[in-house]
Length: 185
Image (cartoon, rainbow, N blue to C red):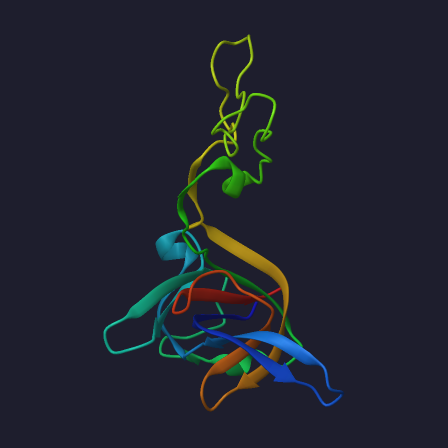
């Protein structure tokens, strides 16, 4: 399995020879250094711990289970991927704060006429006679976004090895500057 950590730089577009335009997300996937290898004998499972550094102060450490081919001080960079590879990208989605049921779950709201006043974006009835309480999982207002999201089936359009950049077709989760995990499928 190919894997790399990166930071989302933003959206851009790539122009093809036939005149088509492809929207891409540019990811700065700097080199990762292997700094620890866990073994079944000592730790109970096999894994490799890597460290990605985006600046002198900020580092991100990640554990990769089942990756035993690496050695300590090996460097993993964007050259593990090639143009045309299918990947899945995981990140933390943009947080949108406390939202109502219309925005959070796509409810239609109440009618604007027939005696309804000031309740256009309300939820409506949320319970039933029995068991006399609201059941778990009922869709209501609450915090929206800010969760771990994986987008599968994305395609790598370009790999820039000199600048450690990847151009991934389409949108990936998170805001600009958010950490992303890019894995082969």
